[in-house]
Image 1: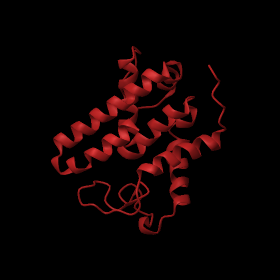
Image 2: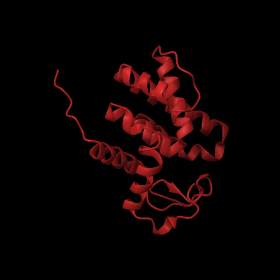
Image 3: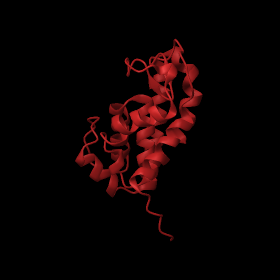
Length: 170
């Protein structure tokens, strides 16, 4: 089995943020999207002092690096594909839900872990010790279930389900 190349920290972030941006569009202000005015996944609701319409890709990347990648410990998840998936879900559904889903996925792969929505040292250690293929598959399944439930309980959001499922399984 060939070894995976070691990707440096900044290269890991670039890989992950480019994956996120491949799912996030340009400017949008859909009345059925709770984020409201949004560009590159950055919403006016979450960042009221940002001129979302004028936001550049580089500014969005800086926000993601500062507010997600570094502070939420995604940079410390050893497997780049798993780090990217948790980061992508956090951008789309919020960190707490993304963390709950990775904790559910850990449980489904046999880990005894609390589902508290916090990506702390216990969850991080469990992630880094897990069978990554099984964990990534379980996380994708949990994300799809989350999106299906969201569409079923909030019918106005059902129009987003196809895109959400594509994202969940990416």
